Image (cartoon, rainbow, N blue to C red; front, top):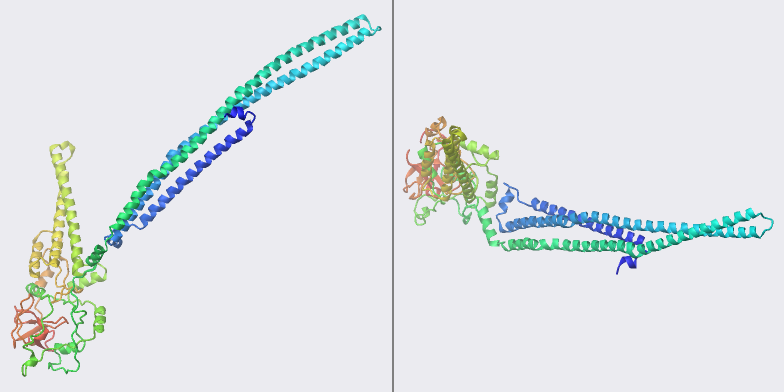
Length: 620
């Protein structure tokens, strides 16, 4: 099967067919090119989609990705990013393995086709030229034959005419001979050209054209084979990335299988646990029994009965704000009892003792009223430091010791801060070690640098390390306070005093007095979290502050053994000074003498407030 023998007369059709084959190849190249553009666009869209849903750094979203479900989603986004990368690989491979090669091949194919058909047209022109020569010699031979025949007839006519002279007859005879000779020459020339044409024609149809058409056939078959190979490569490029895409999908499935609902539930507990105890039972309010307690008009019970008491919500009283008093007094008060006050002893109930004093009963409001008052109440600022704290909170600046957070959340924040400071300390220590090594190199090889030029940098790094260590100690102290590792608040205060003696620029003391006497959490702040290291006039004024004045007296109805820090023991029938009313937490602050003061359960004493003495600077 050869185009040269089967299609010897289809030169024009072969030319059209080969051009169509090149068009098909170019169309396939265009198809692959558009596929690569689609793959790149798809990969770009996948990457943008993955980037869009990635958690933003230093944002709330980043904290949410601690949950296993969110981690699985993050893994899905990462796998989709890798998935997009495989589509980019497909595009690159299609471009390098198909498009580049086919583009060059098409150019070569066009040049080869042009060459073959140029040879074919040249052969056609040659045979056409031979044919024209043959036709010309044939016409000339025919013309010469006719001229010789006419000349012969004219000679014969002249020879038969008796009136014609002998000279005219001889002239006609010579003319006839010349024409016959010309006819013979034309005949010989025609015969020669005819033989040559027949030879060229045989060469054309049996040698030249079959050879040219055979080359064109081979060219077309190579084009078809190359197109088939490109299609196979097209499929192989996709097949090569299928295993990696499968791994991406397997990674998504594996991430989904790692989702643990129990772990997420525990993380929710860790994220939002406040550390508070649930509220206790609400006491029954018996309005059928008249109030039997007899107190003065300005007693604590009356003031609370008029609705001036601090509301209690869920058993969580608001904290107290301590005014400026002497530091040793403040330390004893900061270690107030961390549990609700005990109820009066049942065996020694005043109702069981004839003519005995009645146990104080507090008039209670409905729970909804307490809740509304609790939600609308604002912290009271009683001193300059709490004023500064309140202003910072209003301006949106959170306290440095995270005292505005519940205990459990505060502990987590402090732990994170300690870990962050430790990392910074390690970084500075590595830098110090590097500078020290460089200085040693400079000492051994002075031509490399001046060792003294590193002293300033080394001193700066050492100072940074000292500052970071003091900062870490400060936060570790707060963390120890929250975790209960320190024995007492007073001890913590003494440890904070050690920091004041160190030559650091500024060190923050542990935040104190953020809990009410029962240990519950309060948002009110009573002391500024940051103080200067060097003693200032403000601290001297703080040390010389006078104790709180007495605002009344009280009589102990029962004996109370103050075993917890911040409490004071009283004996039944003992009279003491009242220096702070019950703020709704069930504790009253009293003083026996200048050095003995603390808290007792309100229900254990009967309070008598003195209007004239309230706010006075002298004792009653």
